[in-house]
Image (cartoon, rainbow, N blue to C red; front, side):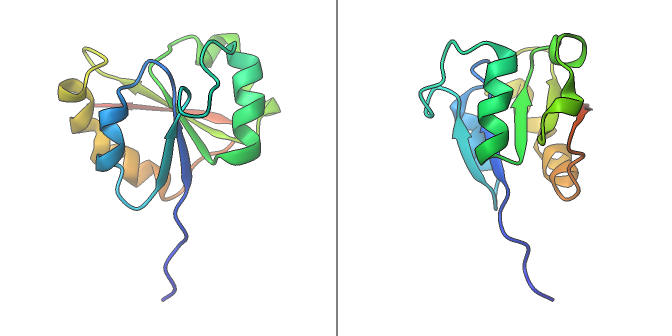
Length: 112
């Protein structure tokens, strides 16, 4: 069976870059690393959909403030007690599982 090519994941500014090594098998970048820091959410999603498959965030506003149908991108909303590696790392298995079949133009909530 052929291996699936890695997906391109973009981590929002509110996520620690130290999460990247745990997202094994995927090409991960950060908003800051793309020089998109400070870009508003709607514009950010427009930029992201051109280069990425999945956008990861902890910003609860993505589910209500953005029309996700406009963007050819899967949005993963990570729900943890805090936005640090210690609290986000336990979500990694669910992130990797959801990445197997990402729902584009939709919000996927990932929590313990």
